[in-house]
Image (cartoon, rainbow, N blue to C red; front, top):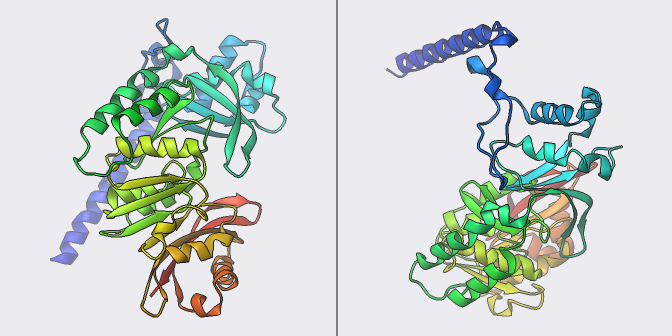
Length: 400
């Protein structure tokens, strides 16, 4: 029975593949003259509202790519430019967060040269409306990892739709929260946060794996390269656990764990007051305000009441949080023999083939032989490339 079922599945797969190849061959034979004139993007209205469909082609062919739309827009606006010149201006690296896009300039492209075509770049994201294009010229600066960005293109603040809808949406989520105390904010506190932050043109929304992250791109960072690790925490079973996140940020890892992992409580420690504010807003709109308990300050000085009470510790900070390992282990529950019990998720940098050795070395250097020998590296994940020959790893360190 099983063999027959597998044969049927294989035949269906082959049939579907044959149909797909036939359709692609047929579409490729259609002349360019059959493309619809309506495929050309058009922007309408006096408030930046775009009422056009995503650029596409007739006959079922794939839609135009962003660089294709960018070429059309720039060559129309600047007919003296060549396609090669325009292609050189299109950013190889950018991050899109809702209505805001942050760009890193290509080598050799000046700030002034890109700013002249920044509106064309914004239009390349249709049907998503991009109201702000920012240039990342300096990267993340300082211990609090604040971005330094320059405006390349923007519409007036009153034309940004998300700023009009976000306060109402977040407030409604607070009102519909589970009637559980304590909560990470009050109605008055929430209203004050919205007045302080939700009026900035760079305040935006990033939705990932069902989790809503609201933040100001001009105040805090959001690394798209950590997507797989954020998704990993959505699959972690923390049922009934007490969790502490030592470097919580706006809730990068804490939110998916709180939403999907079913912890009893998640204590969020964070030094950047802006990040704590956004974490509070995000806890409310993801309906976990009763689970997340933010504290603002240095995790070596705050959270002393959590020592010896936690089942799981998150250490999501790079380039290095090695010096915080001893503090992390102190948060774990301990046996009667004063041995730690629980899980530490430790982030660090290492050569691609050297992750396990480096993690073990860090544990031994910071915790000593007696404690580190009891630690099991149950899982090691390579998250992303961080710098030449340096990779971002996460080690799940289990103390039995």
